[in-house]
Image (cartoon, rainbow, N blue to C red):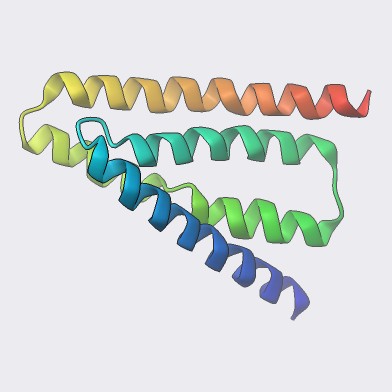
Length: 120
């Protein structure tokens, strides 16, 4: 039961954080959905880091599964990508799609590496 509560509490805080950041940045920089992009990139970095530092299980449940699971958003990224395609903004779509996947993977690797080096 504690596991479920930790994931739920982290998820609540992650979702609220994502909503507020996206609302502010996507409104101001809607041409490439900057809020969602920065959320997914920073979430990738943090999750890569958390995976490799082997924290207490409760912290992993709260932060990794709960907070970062709700903070990062694959579904919003997909809807925003489709919105760009539908509105015939092909250049913005390609930039958003390529940068989100490429930089997301790179940042996850950086976080993973940094966590590994921290423990060495």
